[in-house]
Length: 150
Image (cartoon, rainbow, N blue to C red; front, top):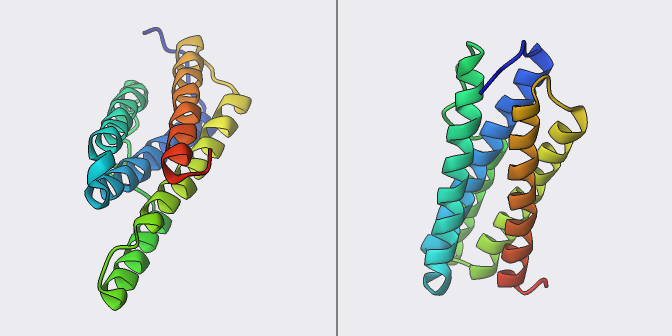
């Protein structure tokens, strides 16, 4: 992959995408645990985010940046509050996990759309972001369908 100089704004956008993918992976993994009927499909979505992370991290590392190894504080807080609700209710609300996936995936979609609009100093990076964006759009549509929001 040929890489040109990356601005600090571009590296910050790519870092944000890495963090968003970590958040997605966690949301899909949590939903997979709560939904045995959809476990395999949700686990596959989580694994796909892992591949996104690896590809984005490779770009950042090629530019001397050390990518984040975890998700956002907001996603962490949402998981904590969901855990408290489960503890109080005594059971997992199945629709909460799908809503969390839809909410998280919608935020990730916005981050990728922003990165795509902003462009890239490298055609290869722009193509990577565009390809991942298209997959995220399809994944969001699929999760909405699983939730019943077709």
